[in-house]
Length: 130
Figure (cartoon, rainbow, N blue to C red):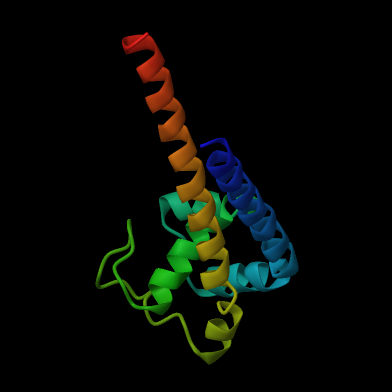
């Protein structure tokens, strides 16, 4: 059990570090994508804050741009909005790094969530069944 937990911690930590490095490498593309969007449109409420906080807002912005690219429904954006035709060939090239970034963050989130649930379960087991 110990080795399994340590392996999950290592995987989660490596995924987090890799996501930071991947963001740092692609940071100019990220800000260019934000600038191109803001020239024509205004971000909806939660995204307008997320676009200003750098790495910590990047997961929500990755969600926004990937949903926009796939023409799927986006939270806080009306289905008939004029935002959906935003992705063109140039902006899609700028979005090419986002699926890897999103995947790394999902791996990190799943691993840390599993560890949190395991800790809660083990603590509850110790308290309820001494």
